Image 1 (tube, one colour):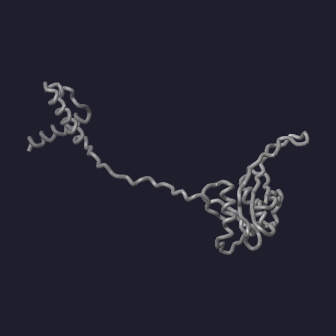
Image 2 (cartoon, one colour):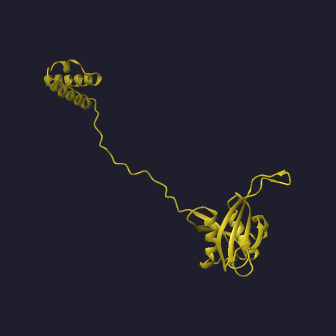
Image 3 (cartoon, rainbow, N blue to C red):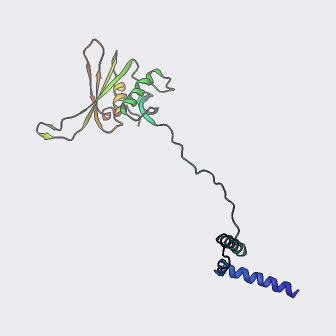
Length: 205
């Protein structure tokens, strides 16, 4: 019984010594480099086990959550109850040209309670021009006018003009919008220059 207790004490004391430091003499006893490496590895494993350290398993972690980005969605002005209202429109990009294309294309779509005053009109193109910097010796800020060319028969109502102008002026770079009707075999007709503020009475508040 005493021998057993004595041997257990020796093992415990040896474990504590190994935890505190690894004696370099253990590495010098072998003349072979390979034996020294094996001895060092054995001592290190004994030290880890004696100190109560156990290796941990490699755990697979789930992939980090990623945000799903919806397709670009912009707005155009349609009609609801006889007044302008902003409605979402999926377009290829956020350019004014794409928004105006979607605005006129709405005339051929089911609008589900909404309407448009642009039926019978076709969007042709736009032209961007800079206003003169100086007028009558008065220096003015550089501002941009957007000219929207359309075609079609009949009268372009104030609601139709408001749809065009307010949709285009969502881009703050344009301080006014000029509308030109460009029908084939006839002279172009200037429908006027406007800002969205000219049609506030027609916009749903």
